[in-house]
Image 1: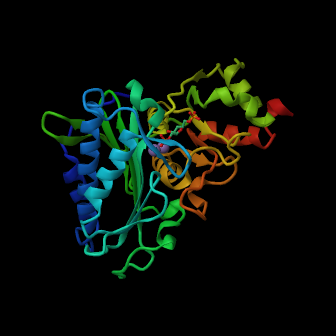
Image 2: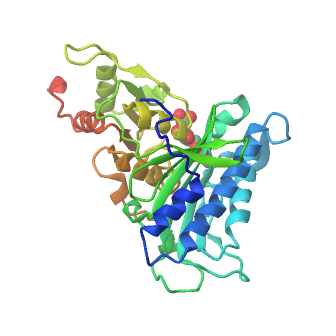
Length: 343
Ligand code: AHG
Ligand code: MN
Ligand code: MN
């Protein structure tokens, strides 16, 4: 599949406007939210591009709620998203991987009907070495649509299937914005010369089966036996299955982006060090799972659909197996000890 697969010239704002036209009841609030979010992403992209030139590499002296040392760019991206989103009147509350509690909308601004949840900078360990990093976001409707008060914890702790929209920006060889509002997955590419995201792939579909697997295999000895058997199986040749190739970038956005186009499976399982896996349900797994499902893929924690999990705290983690439906189903068989090669 050619990566540039659409002939229409459409900017992301035009695309958002066209989607809004499908909803005669729309007030324009959602489009304005997306416009502000796109501005934040463009600003983060600009600073990622200048990371070696500006003073934005390296660590701050802070630790985030997960005990990880905060990189300057994490902190910067968190701040940019807040400053772009706090005053638009469309949000009632936000939550970020880099902020301990809920992020309220300041008192003097109008409280709107949406909730924004985000991972401002995904792939922190790759920032300083010029490897692809990203930004991930989820949008929910508040539970009481007509309320004008601050959003609450319950407004944030909604299961992923309630997402109104989700997406990520991938700051790689170009900047992509991958987006869904539940009508398939569209990919936009940033044209720096005109300052616009242009639609480059419409309604992307993930292959039913791939030939890549993606997992931090350095943790092999911390996995349970069924998972070890699955990965051993992937690496071996069988009459009807060639050995899979390993691809692992260590930025979930980048590993999922490749999986979206080429198929295969991306995993961050539970292991002895991380009994619930490492990735965060709200900031990473829900938005990435919505995108993968919208492209025809599958995303589970090994048995249950990620989007059906009800979060009980904003920073909770979950194991994940996502990608081509046939590959994820096969992984689930192994995890349950039911694959023919295990019997
Ligand atoms: P973040 O930079 O937002 O903390 O996320 C890092 C995550 C994710 O992007 C990636 O898939 C994973 O950490 C890599 O973890 P390992 O280094 O344990 O493989
Ligand atoms: Mn992340
Ligand atoms: Mn992050």
